[in-house]
Image 1 (cartoon, helix red, strand yellow):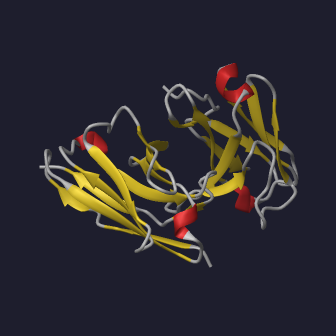
Image 2: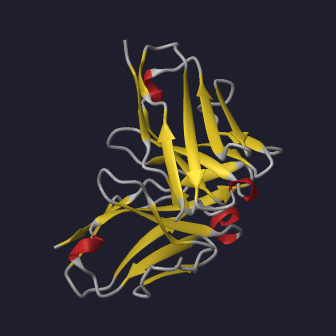
Image 3: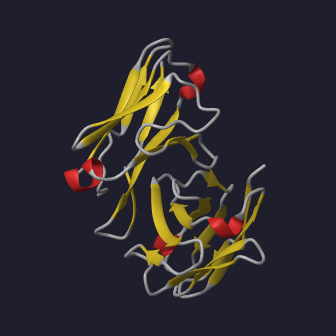
Length: 110
Length: 115
């Protein structure tokens, strides 16, 4: 069982806005930076969001992220078929001295 | 262009050993921390090990501590993962990921542990 909890699946139609949640203890979510990764089948993960809100260069601004004390969210607006992938949240856990990942959310574009 | 290339994966018997390598290029290797992350077939991502830029700080997940050793050679721009006493549960694609936010990832190398 992951320290960070994500819904196993999410879906939306083209053009819609979809959010993927990542919940955990306040000691992790509230205190640590959250990163989000996108992974296509057979490919390596790609960093989408770092430091909870920041987008690396090349990531479109229709990708955004939010965070509260116990929950983080990734939002994808203007959904496209090429957004269909697995999405993972991650954070550094000081108590474990290591990274923890959410279980991943499979996004389907209907 | 940042590039990370893993190698060294393969089929190994339970109890065996293997050394993975990650060759880096396109950035100042010695300035950044690295992680190994693995993904079992059909499963999610699992962090394995971390090493700081100088190698002075090293951390492992509970599942590999005492069996795996992470190291780096800044002169060769290379990261390593020595794995021993391998188990079936270690079967996975192993990725190296660079920088504090695991910003860059290699393509992965498959380790299969089976008799």
